[in-house]
Length: 239
Ligand SMILES: Nc1ncnc2c1ncn2[C@@H]1O[C@H](COP(=O)(O)OP(=O)(O)O)[C@@H](O)[C@H]1O
Ligand SMILES: CC(C)(COP(=O)(O)O)[C@@H](O)C(=O)NCCC(=O)O
Ligand SMILES: [K+]
Image (cartoon, rainbow, N blue to C red; front, side, top):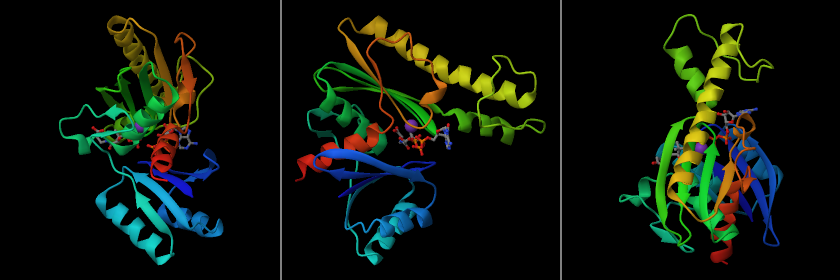
């Protein structure tokens, strides 16, 4: 079986073999995705998507046409020992939900999860499996693009400059947004330190983790594919 996450920017695909998640690759757009699925003669697929209903409907149609058996995983109010904090539980992004399931399967301590993609999110899961809620902010490229869209003289660069201070607009914008992203993590760390006495396991996921500084955080794990690991938790339980 294959596992698929459809994010707001990229899709990520993995093989689920012998209880193991093996990352295959990522890409952009439905066309590329279907090509990869067909080339790897996929028969069974478990997927989760934060895309629009329209995009999801299109994906479902194309999978059916390609003869691929699929299950779409959606956010639940509770599963595998985790309780969703949202009153309207379905509104919690399924990617966030899956990172909670993955974290719970990896440790029974308190967890703080940061997923840096199109958005950067924080989710706190206590040791009893109760999700406490979290934060949502724009991710690095999204922050840059927002300012480009609302000003006339600003352009963006998406690769990291070597400098610490920008001596041109593009560098200044990148470094400023990166500082905001790092500030998000620092604030999360301060919040956790002030509110939890027992050890907290930190998980960092998503395509944007390379822009963070994590050396001051104890018990920090880089797990770029935590959402796919969450899908594996669901796949295991549905066997
Ligand atoms: N080469 C890259 N291509 C696209 N995004 C990148 C790249 N390197 C870093 N990123 C960062 O990762 C984000 C996309 O991460 P990803 O976890 O795939 O997002 P999503 O789950 O929202 O689709 C981008 O918004 C950007 O900040
Ligand atoms: C917060 C998100 C935009 C993050 O998406 P991503 O950056 O992973 O593509 C996504 O999880 C989402 O659409 N969530 C629904 C709103 C919520 O979780 O409250
Ligand atoms: K995210």
